[in-house]
Amino acid sequence: MPSVIETINNANMKANVVPVRSGDIVRVHQKVREGNKERVQVFQGLVIKTSKRGGHLNRMTVRRVANGVGVEKSFLMHSPLVVKVEVTKRSKVRRNYLTYMRDLTGKAARLSGVDFDRASVNAIPEEVVPEVVAEAEAEPAIEAPAASEPAPSEAEAKDEKVAPKA
Image (tube, rainbow, N blue to C red):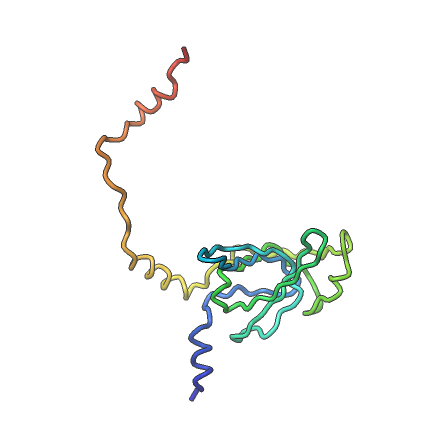
């Protein structure tokens, strides 16, 4: 019998988490609240560490250099603030924690790329697709107000565009 904590953690886990590895270059879309407004901010960088894969505490640390200063952010993959994670490039590395990348700049900081199918990595798993379709069908469609004048036919629209200049 699972404990109360395990039940809550399993209920809050996302079904469509992208498999991210160390050495990947990712774009993380994160919700940011500023006052009363909420927007999505994108943070793109190199994944230098992943931990607790498969669990509800699945975490990744992303590093980028902004204005000559190294910036590292840690993201919980199952957090409701993380909207989307896109893998843009996958590199071959032999370690999980790439601390040596902090000291490298320029050409020395390049990692050898590996071919991968970006569409399959960033795609929603098949078992989630029916749920998304069902949610989309459940929402009522907003219809545009009917126009009082009929739209011009294609022939009339072409005549207006080709009209000679005076």
